[in-house]
Image 1 (cartoon, one colour):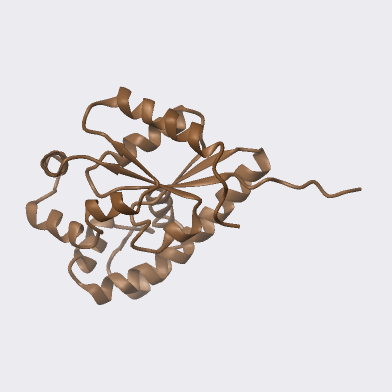
Image 2 (image 1 turned 120 degrees about the horizontal axis):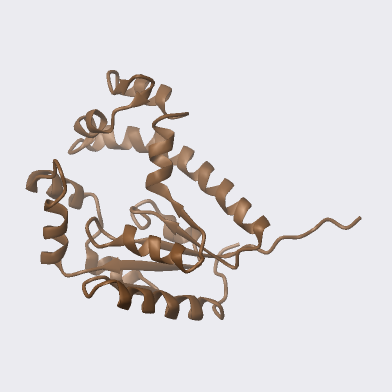
Length: 207
């Protein structure tokens, strides 16, 4: 019996700086029928599973009731490059393993296109592992206003987060596609439809 072969889906990397509307855009890709891997959701799950023991060992006191307290962990690593590097060395391999399992599952299901929603796609070199990059963007004043509306967010905390992310202008310059979220949902839906039509004829650039 000949083994069944599976065709790898076209992989879209979805990214954008904090407050740009990336999560909403990811939901609209899913609404359009595209499987979406949410790296942030994967991290949340890991903080209640296999990441708990190594993170508690590296940052004693950040565990609570068998899970990682994200606020405590953030307080330990924000603004500390060495601590952030230790955190990433623990979490990134675990996230990649979940990502690979997701890609294998959607390939078996025959999905033609998938989205990897990864906030730090460029910063972690993830853009080299996808076939095209979609950057979500909005004007700086709108971005800042959106973020500062969030609970427990301060200007200092926002500046620390933005310091870890590539500037929006650089992300847009490196993108294959840009999605502007400043004019509501319908233009975003229309842009997603355009992107999906384009990638249907684009060659894959990764194996």
